Picture 1 (spheres, rainbow, N blue to C red):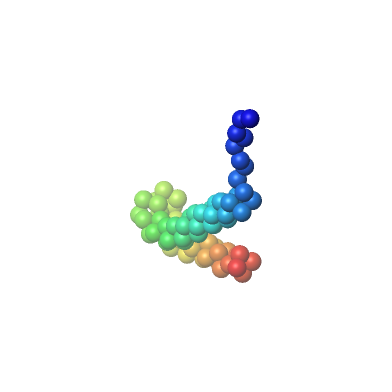
Picture 2: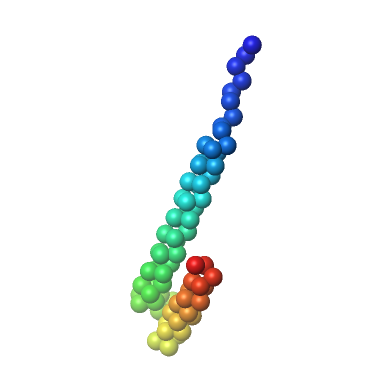
Length: 78
């Protein structure tokens, strides 16, 4: 009688799924952190300012729009 490979136990499958979800959540947090920290840097670069023809008011509006939206969305995300 040939041996049939056993399927993973439900406990092992649940544990594997749990770690996959944790890894995806971790990747999402890293992406959110990088986007938060890169926007103010980009708005201060002279090449970025010249390319998009931004005034100081425009840069302030862009920064405010991002951070107000970010702050408002922290409530449902929490």
